[in-house]
Structures are given as C-alpha cells and as structure tokens.
Image 1 (cartoon, rainbow, N blue to C red):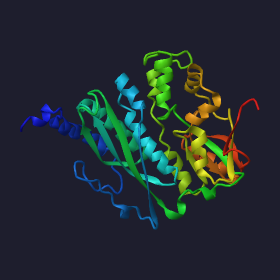
Image 2: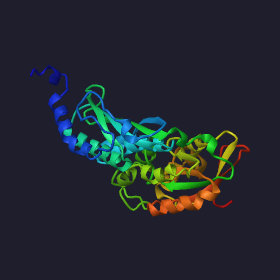
Image 3: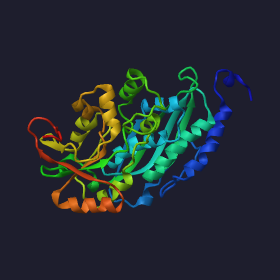
Image 4: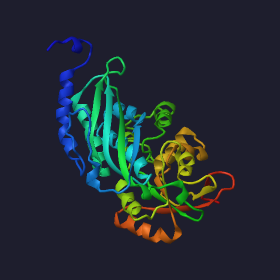
Length: 347
C-alpha cells in the first residue's frame, strides 16, 4: 500500500488496530435488540424485540467538554468515556425513557491505539451501567486540526418509552416532594471554570492534595459522572415519578425548571443533602459567590425528582432496596418570583 496518506499524518493501520482492540469491550454491551456487528456502515437495532405498543424514541447527544483537557493533561483516559455516556443517557432517562443504544465519535490528532482503547473501554463501561448497547462509532485521525496528544469525545444515544409513560411538565403539581439523588462530584460541567480556579488562579497541579479533599486533585476532578438509569427505571415503570431534572450545565437554576410548568417553583432547602468538599474548594479558592455556585454546578445532586406526597415512602423504599441514597430536599410551590428558591441553612 502506498504511503501518501501516512506522509499526510494519517496512520490507517493504527485505525485498524483500534477496531480490533475495542471489539472485546463492545461485546460486553450487547442487549436485546442488537442486530449489527462492529465495523459495518451503520448500527442496527430491532425495536420489535421490545414489544412496546406505542413506542416513542427519545434521543440525546453530548460531549465531555473541557474535562477532557484534564484527562489529557494527567494521561488518565480510563473513565472519561463513562462521562460521555452518562451525559447522554441521563438526559434520556429524565424523559422517562429506557436507553437502548449508544454511538461514540472520537477525533484525534494522532491515532494511538493503546490510548483510544482506554477511552472506548470507558464508553463500554458506561454502556454496561446504562444497559445500552454500543452499536457503532467513528474514530477520525485529523492531524493539523488537533495536536498529537489531543482528542475530542462525543456521543449519541437513543432510548424508548411507551407514549403514555413519558414524563412531561404537566404531571408536576404544587405540593409535590422533591427528592435528590447524590452526584459523584462535579460530573462533567463547569470545567472551564474548574481549570481556571485550580490550575491558573492557584497554580495547583494534578498531584496536589488539598487539605479539604485528602486525595490528589486529579482523582477528584476525573471522578466519572454517575449514571442513574438503573436507579430510576423501576420508579418510572411503576409511574411513581412526576418529574425529573438532570442537573448538568447551568446547575440548579437552569435545569430544575425544565421539569415543571411556568406557574410553579421549586423550593429547595440547602443542607438537606450531604455536602461534597470539592464544591467548598471551588467556592473558596475561586472566590465564587455562593448563589452563583448553584447556577454553575450540581452542588452534590445529579438528579432531582418530583414525587406526589403519597408516593414518597414507596419511592424511597425502592431506592433503598436498589442501594441508592436519596434525600428529601424541598417541595413544589406556586410561583411567586423565581422558578428556583434555594433556602440557605441558617434561614
């Protein structure tokens, strides 16, 4: 084979090696409905195998953002793929749908099979956690567009729901109880500010151990996003949840109102869920206004559920049986001024 493409900076053989390396990871994600084999021109999925009467497809797409820059900086690529899957499937389950399959896209300046295998292994692990099949993807070697050590990662997921089971704003009512499910940390949002605070304003590095954290900063910052599919699906299938807010970019202020109508507001009591030290560190070392923290970060809660008062005990029991922590954090009220009211601990 000629070497013209190689001279342009693209290693075709390395691309073939990546496909071989990731096959064992992809196989772990197979589930009912998968039809296609890795390496075809498109991923196929048989919806008829699911026996849903009025199927509605729910799709989601997202990337990891500048959290990737920390993974590259620290040469830690094993879990970043979990973040990519989580950002897509958590949005899908928030609509009341079950994730079915996932496709990834990786663009890089230089195709390094060992590194890309680690990335895809993380994607596969995220798919296993979400019970979603990894049915395809694309790796693009783009010298000149990216540096040799750089890569970008994005994904696309599709889920399915019975039309009658979709979670819609109209279901949430005043008096509904708000239940929060804890996050594992920052998840995958706000990392442009995170990097600025820790690596620019304070000149910390990945090995820095802050007294508030008791472990290297890189380990805290690269903790993967939690995937809530298995925790929420049993509740969704029993019709126990009126609304779900996935707390991502925009924090509480942007995401919580997305689950209810304009005439309502969420009244949230701060201090009703465990505090994660990483957010105290960001506020302290970044000199960030406390209210603004709720506009940027998840503040320790990755999902917030709106539940009818008479269903709360059952919801908490099911979550406990599934080894999921949950906290009553507030309630829905008639809107007065703002859509989200954060009541501080000392009030």
